[in-house]
Image (cartoon, rainbow, N blue to C red; front, side):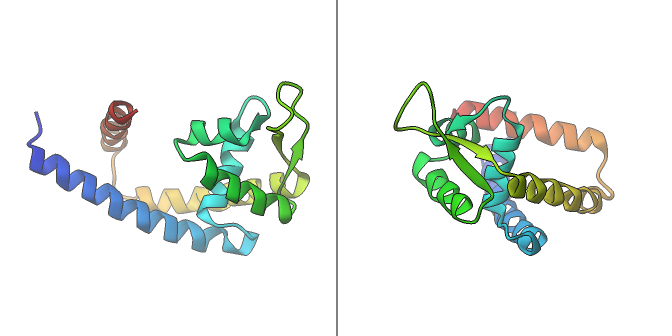
Length: 143
């Protein structure tokens, strides 16, 4: 069982890593008119099996609805996504990718491949799988 101080250090390192990943992601997708946050929201929409309202997207991402709503509104203004009538709820429109949004998300994912490959250099797949398991377990416990 890990020592509490070691787990605390791991948590601090995850916070630091998150900041670095967001900054690097911003730099990676800036030429596409995106930020890391916009890229994450586009990804949640693109990877969903059905069109969803903002509240469902936020829940799937583990984020607050208000923050996701702000990003979605920006994406609508810039033509990356659009609202569509929701037959189940008049005041909660569905969010859908536009052609511009699909193209930007695809381009971001193409940029992501070599970036991830470079980051993974020197790290074994076993180490990645083990780390993923630990982080997933911690997230599930917080849920």
